[in-house]
Image (cartoon, rainbow, N blue to C red; front, side, top):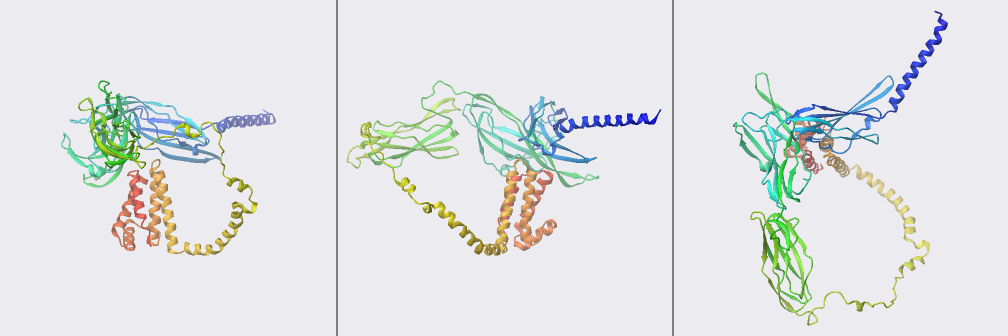
Length: 588
């Protein structure tokens, strides 16, 4: 065949191929981001984890962010935050990027589960993923022992979290005590979260608790020794009747496991993050009975006593006397209304003002103004409440308190209250007196304006200040006091950034803490502290500060921050507080 005939055909084929390639490449380049969700495994046991991998590729993948905190799914709870990784490549002159978010979920029930929909922001555009169904099976129980909710993944039965309530059947408004207890047979290095969300259907009051102070030990049916702590203690008051559920709570606990060599000898240890779920609790709330409800029922449920006293026994007519009433007892007082006071017609009472409030008591002040002289009785004082132990309404009372009222300043009864309407002038037209100060301001000349004076005087003052104060500021900045001030400001900025990131990104917060500690140590030692090992760092700080205890706390805090940064184990809030306490002592 003639080559001259084939050459045009070859050129045409090349052009067609190039056109097809461009036609396929242009839509791909113009297409939006590709978001895919991978869930593994789809069938899990209650003691296993579900790993969710969200992959974002295409245009704008590097800017992708997960909006908000990881949401809860059906029978699935998030175990901590999301870890992020980005892969960027440049092949044949083309740029491509892939960003991944990896999350872990813990089963919170048996049956059908569902990985929730995630909201992802990609270059200003919001993308919603589709929910993914999973199947959750019951985990096998350990021989001879029932497993508590939230056993450790893998079925090792070494650490668990329990949900403990003092009562599961209460009246509406009756408080219950809720505790989350961590029990373990291995060494615990930290736990997360450090705070809990509100509970739907309940009024929540968090009570301070120190896990170290609540430590207890026990043995299970197999004779194994456990150590337990109370992580959180909350007082819950139901706000509606019916069957209310305290939802399960996910925990991530850092445990230290021992290593064994080939001969079975234990040595050292390594940190591991274990996901646990504190099981849900169902509370049956009974409505308060209508029969026997007093008209002045305060809404309080519990067992209470009432106290009342006047701040003085004698008062002049028209003057105020304070009636102090205090309710004490066990139960819910936070939403209760104040006690009621019965008064004679010639004694006026104003609205009660809460004076003090604390665990198990509330105190109000009731201002009382007698209008006529004589001897009056203030009271009785009543506080109606519901006693859940007896299942009926009761009233705490204080008998009337005597008050002697002397004549007022005019020698008779006080004439309090608003003046009659007739004394206000009725419909007569009166002059409206307007101050003439604004009119005088309009008559001032322009050079008398304060703003003009400031604009004329301020530039020379600034120039004079820069000329005189500039050298002084430069000299102070190079002095030891200036260096200490800059160090204090730099450390404060690092710790403030750590507190801001503590909730969403504990690893980044730990990095800020590490930087702050090294800034402080470098100033103390007079040389960079990063190349020094722990022994040299401890000795150098102890020698320069003269305080071995301070040097030891520094090293321990630095190691704790590094454990959170690189292993994700520990409580970032305590580490930040410890670093702040150490760095307050700025070196001289």
